[in-house]
Every structure is written in C-alpha cells, then in structure tokens.
Length: 380
Image 1 (tube, rainbow, N blue to C red):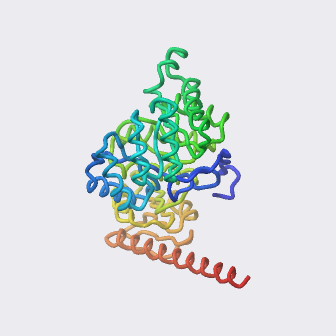
Image 2: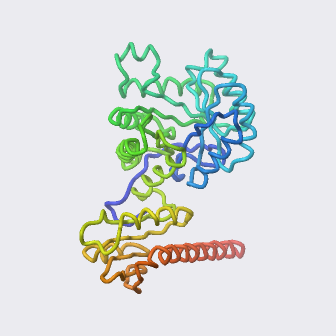
Image 3: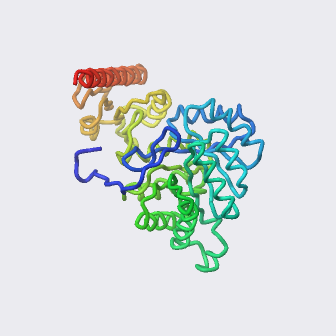
C-alpha cells in the first residue's frame, strides 16, 4: 500500500474464514477466484483447466457439481490441484454432502434451496465434519418467489434480505464459517446491494458482477463495479465473470487489484496509447512484452513510453523504463534514472532480460530478509 494519503483504501472490517488454506476476510489479502467450464466428471480436462488458472495466479477455483458423477470426480480433482476447490451446489443437498466428503474446501449453496431444515442440518454437519466453509450465493436472476412478490423486482433490499435469510439458516445451526455474495448483472444493482449488505453484517463478502459479458464488455463492467466496491473497502474475495476462459478472468481480477494497489503480482506495465511522436511501435511492443513477461510473478513496474514528453517522468516511478529516442536508439531507465541506450532491434529481448534479472534480484533479497528474520527469531 502506498504511503500517499490519497491512495489509501480502508477495508471494511469482517470476520475471517478459511477456504482450504486460503484465509478470506479480516486482514487477509483479497483473493482471486474463477470457475471451470469443463464437465466436472471429466477430471483430466478440469484439472488441466485449473492448472492453467494456477499459472495465471488464481487463489480459489469453483467447479459445478450437479450430478453424482461430478462429485465422484471431485476427489481426484482436489488431489491433483494446488488451490482450494469450491463445489457449486444447487438444490440437491446430497451433492453438497458428497462434495464435502470428496475434499471440497467450500460449498457454494443457497440454504433455502436445499430443502427442509433437517437437510440443511445434514449439509452443515458434513461441512463441519470435513472442514468446509460455505458461500451463500444470492443472484438477482434467481431470487426467491416470496421476495419477488414482496418487492416487485430484484432490488438491493431484496438481495440483502435474501442473503440474511439464508445466513440465518446457517446461524440457526451454529455454523458461522461462511461468506456471502449478492451478485447482479446490473452494475448499479450489484454495487448498491453489496454496499447495503456491508453495513448490516460482518461476514466476509465475495464480490462480482455476474454474467458481465464477453472479454471486452465484461472486463469494463467488472472494472466499474468491482472497482467501486473495492475502492470503498468492500470485498474479501472476487470473481470476474466473463464469457472467456477462466485464466482470463484471473488476469482481469489481478489487474483490478493491482490498479487499486490492493495486491501486487507480476509485471505492471505503464504504457502510452502511442501517437505520431512515438519513436517505436508502442502497441506491438507492449503486446509482445505482456506475453513474454507473463511468467514473472514478482511485482515489478515497467514503463514503455513512445517519446520524451512523458517518458522520463513515468520512468521516475517505475523499476525499469523505456523512452523512445531518435535514430532507432531508445533510452533505458533503472530505478528512475537514465542508465543506457538500446537499439530497437534488440529492445524487446533486452527488456525481458532486465525484468527477469530484476525479479531474481528481488527474490534473492526477499529470501535473505526472511533468513535474517528466522535467524533473529531463533536467537531470541
């Protein structure tokens, strides 16, 4: 987090739960979630998709479990991946019990849809016995009939009332390890519902704009909605819902968090939109660097500016910078200061090498710091 007061975000205080090994709420980092779209019973395909999401930086993955075959495959999936798996359950309480037994870290349910109070009690018992948390997932597109009759349409009051009604089912069973979502595809409705819910409970909140659309449309809608909530300190875990591959959801989620200074992972590229002043092809260069540097997990800032109008100023605020110059030679900056020039033909390879070297340096410094702390603690 920046020391500058205008960049400070004060997060809402919430209880903390565990989704497998990932803490959610409290002072834990905001986690990034996605959902698989492979048939869950095809364990190999689902595992492969989760592994791609892991490379992108996902913290939690949700999988649909609508059938006995899908919950049967869940045990292998959980065993073969490195992130907690949330089992998505609708209506049938037995799927929830099977998923808990198979090793799901969390059950996504609507307790009111599970059935009788006895069935809810059985699901809660399975969650408690197997160390599962629960997510109450309220959606504007599937509100309960009595709430639609009461309010006439999905609105913030209806979403919040639904969430608290479902929460009461769990609390009546003395179960408190749950988070809540109140999603809508309408940005205004979702933001208003989450803001209202945040005021009346201390449960961790899973935020998202549901059914946001394709890659471009959904990214914009999610950035507006999630950006508003996160800027207000609301949200403990998030999912960007795109009609795109799961790893793309993860990338967008991370970019939203990085833009707000809430989490840092990988290379953050600051680049100009390009114009006639550019000394090199900025657009193509940035696209190539994004692809070539996708494997870097260490937080590093890189500025790519086409000319000297803003280039030196942006370089002051980044670890490594490049500003377009004349005659096919461009200025490279290190820690905000001019360092050397590079020929355009070698520019991309040179920048990749500099970033990789910087990542190794940061990792070595962090390892040395941790080793020193461990030595100091051992000496106490």
